[in-house]
Image (cartoon, rainbow, N blue to C red; front, side):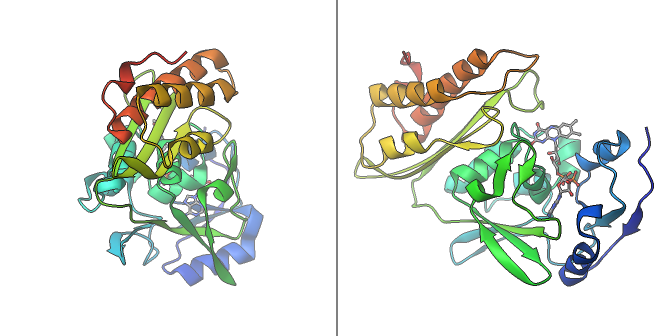
Length: 294
Ligand code: FAD
């Protein structure tokens, strides 16, 4: 199949892009890396009247650390993030997660912002930015808003982005030194979307957990944050039993949509084991990964 007819715009600045989105709104689509949108155009699952190609817009890509915050431009290629040495410590979770996205050819074109805006519930980057407590910067012609991941990811391929809004930047906060992170995924083949993936970040001081973030992909209609696990970890000195209990209780509450690769129970099973292993690694709790969660 070939795409339907559309007008094609190549703005070179953010204000120009925002004006186009204001003018054409719901009839227009933003084109970033095209790794999801172009197949949708070709299959005519998306039929925009205008395509706003943001590949030539200045100021939308690049990775920088400012005042302790990691700032990632929305048009930063996934491969650039994967190769960037600033994403270390807790931010290393982004490295781990992005390495699971498709194959190198896809990551070379695909963008960080495109992955978030596309909001595939099985995508890795939404889970990673959720666990890290990132802020998503969204602009429209008449203003800017900063959105937490939980307000951004609304459901199955759905975000809170309005038709005239552009995701411009992802800001990842600093975590204490010594923070540990872990990203684990089960997929049918290397490079496939996650059947289930878990992103976990844990900071400890004097043995006690002081801060944590845990999020899952592939376990619900949207990226899901494991608040009950975070609440259970904060202030504790977790051991293998605590981790097994938190993982088991959280997974039991999940209601993942079944698909051709397995029933909901299979995904709950994956979630429980991946959570247990990821939490063991992120908390630095030897033996927790091997404890059976009832
Ligand atoms: P595009 O395809 O250009 O756009 C996607 C959507 O986001 C469109 O609706 C577009 O309008 C919107 N959009 C893009 N950027 C912005 C922005 N800045 N502001 C507002 N809206 C915006 N992804 C995974 O996570 N995991 C995988 O394992 C995986 N495997 C893949 C395997 C294959 C074979 C292919 C083709 C893709 C795979 N992908 C996977 C998808 C890939 O990660 C895409 O890069 C990503 O989903 C979309 O990013 P993009 O930059 O290509 O966006």
